[in-house]
Amino acid sequence: MRLNHGTMTPIYPPKQNHMQKYRKQTKKLHRGFTLLEVMLVLIIMVTIASLVVVAVQGQRTAANKRAAFTYIKTLQGLVDRYEFDMGRFPTTEQGLAALLAVPSDVHNPADWAGPYISDTATTRDPWGNEYQYVSPSRDGQRSFEIWSFGPDLIDGTEDDITNWGTLGD
Image (tube, rainbow, N blue to C red; front, side, top):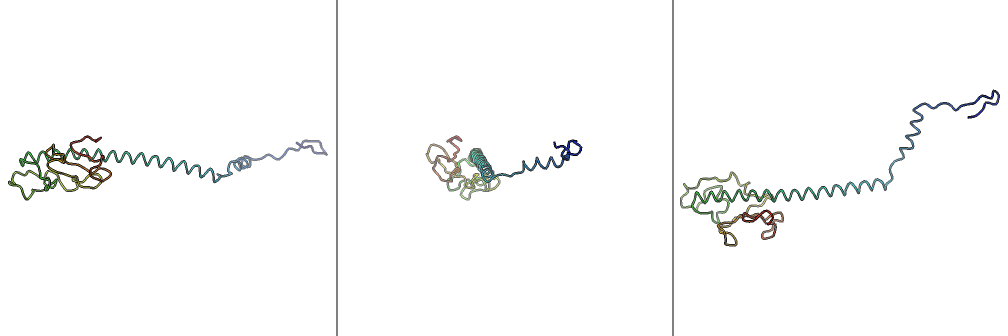
């Protein structure tokens, strides 16, 4: 506070209105982000996004394995039904196509009660490959075997999915 020399009355500074106070306060708050702060936030966001992608991809692979296993079990039941109707399992040469149309080499086509599945899209695994079929099974212990190459798309590896195994096999 200053004094007016002639009258000795105090001279007060002019009162600031509320907008002037707000502008002063916000000028202090709007100083911006540094490049380091922006880069740190970006690194954190990319790290979180990559963790989410890895988790989702793992879930997708597990879901595809379950779907393949379930459908192989369905195909197994359809092959069993084919055997009940025809008196024998489809040969390796006939394959799963015998479930779609009457094989040309059957002795009595009238016994065929198919189609047992509706179309060829249902003979493909979740990775887009045909399900594999042999009769008798590759180990010779069973009447037939149905399998998928699994997510690695390579036959004979540990991620193959078969009708005689479990999902963890």
